[in-house]
Image (cartoon, rainbow, N blue to C red):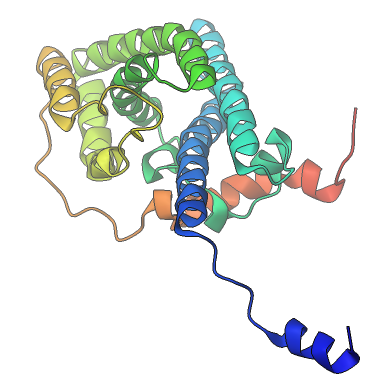
Length: 271
């Protein structure tokens, strides 16, 4: 081939991918982003709960919160591995967890909120748990066998998590005037983040059943609040940020700076 012809060929634009290939890539990307969101939710919330180590109100609760944090981080690792496999870019679960910036995280805003007092942590956990368990139960029927296997294991943990946060919600709401006031204040603050729970449905390719409905979540929450002598807040404007789209509060940046410092300082280091 002559030099002139070679230059002409090289200057031609690459052919557009076939519609089928383009659709497959979009589906792969959507699946990756969806798995990443579920993993990020658990990683960030698990890290938040780990911050209670040494600070919980009683020793029994110190152990409980630490165990829930470990459950969530373990779930996150499994989901990161599925996400890395789906992406097919050679990134590991550790790379996804520790080598992304805040704009690349897909966790919901609810889970990145600082712990506040103990009542705030319990309300945040209860809202997440009331949403999470039906999600996992639906995913147990997933046509994606690896995801169904993950969900079957995670369901057992999620049932305990919901029982734990629900129990504390009742104790705090039905306790003293002060504990009730603090729990209601936490609910009033956190309720505005709940619409994001339902912005990303389960992907049809991942599950044979639809996403847990908002009505199911509302029913679970209303029943618990009634029993705990708490009042469901009025609908509040949802923040302009969207965690699933990578738009986060300043709190996530501070959390990642602490969580990622070792890996960032010593890339690739091994114990």
